[in-house]
Image (cartoon, helix red, strand yellow):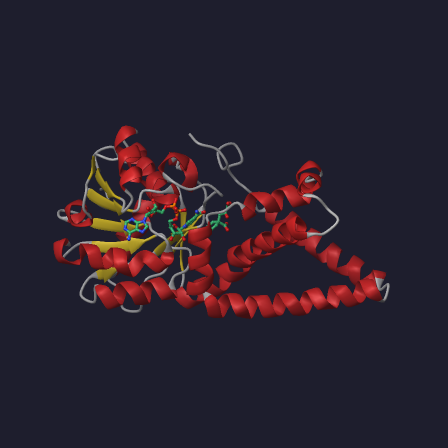
Length: 302
Ligand SMILES: NC(=O)c1ccc[n+]([C@@H]2O[C@H](COP(=O)([O-])OP(=O)(O)OC[C@H]3O[C@@H](n4cnc5c(N)ncnc54)[C@H](O)[C@@H]3O)[C@@H](O)[C@H]2O)c1
Ligand SMILES: O=C(O)C(=O)C[C@]1(C(=O)O)C=C[C@@H](O)C=C1
């Protein structure tokens, strides 16, 4: 049985539009309605026939929804929930796709205290934004972490998990705070480092911008892809997951200082031992098939 027959998606950017496409592909009988605060995004969504209906108000989008998925930047979640509050059916399940969970759960609970709120985070994305950047296969063989609050209705949790399984994701359950700590080191810190290194390189006196572009091969080029990620989304992630990010950043800074010392004092063993350990980690990730398991479609439009 389908987990939901009517799904409303609020926010039709990369993730919202990918979810709309994926639901329509995997579950063609599900009615998908969509809304975005930006009229240009709504126009594009209509032009590309993204949903069964794209509405001009958030309320109209959710009036008969069984599931509402908020796909807006994390610090806009509370405002998006407030906009649908009066039109939301009592029995509707509310979910979201935000990259951090504790702060989003607090925002949604404050605005919709009487609704079943089952947050989730598909750990899949690209550096691109907007409805045209989305693609149906984005979630295939990627993790989706469902972070139900304490005491959540198990049936609602299972229906949200099943929706993500149907669009191809592997589902894990996690406590919201633990999610935020794990993702701070596996996703948020890497983005912060990428933003920093690309900024540092472009600020260098004595190195021209054209040289940075001309010689950006290998490692630096990979950093530039990540550093091209959406500014609004990432500003919100760092501010909403401040504590976990600062904790991981502190540990990272200490490890970087140790590396700085090793280089200064010609401690080749320290460098060699660390690089040997990190190479083994990378190889075990590849062996477990967790490295870009979908290389053919992970980085392009369908
Ligand atoms: N991009 C990724 O790699 C990725 C991966 C997983 C999860 N996420 C999460 O998904 C969410 C959406 O990210 P995205 O990459 O799709 O961003 P996006 O910029 O492509 O899309 C966000 C959309 O939300 C709309 N919006 C903003 N405020 C709104 C509001 N109050 N009501 C209605 N629409 C509103 C914007 O107009 C925009 O079209 C974020 O919470 C992000 O943390 C992103
Ligand atoms: O591949 C990318 O472009 C991503 O940054 C995707 C990525 C990640 O860090 O893995 C980014 C943020 C999300 O919340 C989930 C996935």
